[in-house]
Length: 117
Image (cartoon, rainbow, N blue to C red):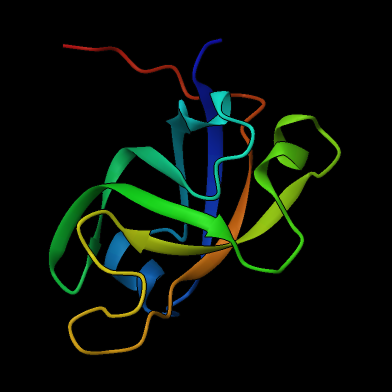
């Protein structure tokens, strides 16, 4: 099964767009191959910045009880509310502050074409 192309809209923190020129990111995951997986690692096509630190991956999990990624993969949901944490950071703590990254994830039906060097 190929990579799953994704779109992520970061709604919190509200400063995300200011630090990154856009609140929208595109990327991909291979974690969709495991239907019971509770969180996914998403590789973003364009690095993003949080508190002046640059990241190329994020870990996402469904925000609400009872929601699951398999609904997104099977096309029974258009988007899913998610908790977001940059890879290398903890779910519960970002530099001493409570986790405050949330957003929406959806399948990218028109993935960006990207040329590898």
